[in-house]
Length: 216
Ligand code: PRT
Ligand code: MG
Image 1 (cartoon, rainbow, N blue to C red):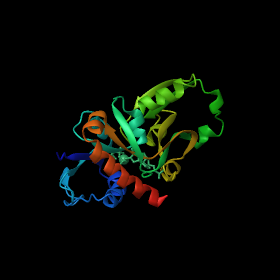
Image 2: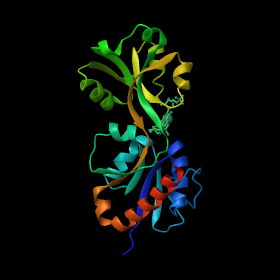
Image 3: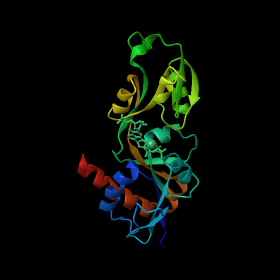
Image 4: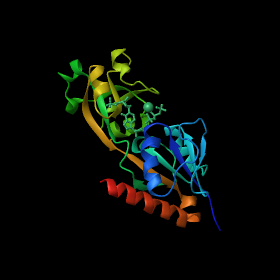
């Protein structure tokens, strides 16, 4: 019996960095990934790619609309669903999740003395958990992007956001004051697909693992 594998990916850096790994595992899109098509056929008749928003990948996989997906650890940590298994750290789209604040505030701030913080972020769950574990109260303001603007506009004192080169923080007069987690993208699968399509899943994972390891 042949079964189809559907892999959920998001446009942008995850798609760009995952395609070479998939290619080494024998899967290449036949449709142009830059087109507006949201379902891409591949050189393997039994493998399809679906292109969705990064934050929607865990949802597609959990509910079986995709068997597998590639999502940032940040997205997976924030996601409240369950039934997802991490199969492989793809070592792509690396960055870190950090607390940042205006350089002026940082000059006299001591994170050891924090008791209550007003934070703007799109990572509400991660932020709550991180500070609750340290006994620090948080007033969290949910944003969907451009977190770096919040302290400048007076919306919050601090932000929790992804940092890669640090150029965006710097350009907005912000500095990192606390590291929360190192982030990279992971290949995830749902429980049912792992069980029902285990041979196909394992073969794909083995191919991608070899590709990841050859880059280390
Ligand atoms: O952009 P869109 O709204 O469609 O969705 P998205 O932002 O969730 O997707 P995308 O493609 O931007 O990010 C997908 C994943 O890439 C994230 O979930 C992370 O796991 C990973 N990633 C790696 C990053 C970065 N590096 C990164 N630098 N995601 C975002 N950034 C942003 C960051 O938020 C900040 O605004 O880049 C800016 C900082 O970059 P530097 O280099 O200036 O520090
Ligand atoms: Mg983005």
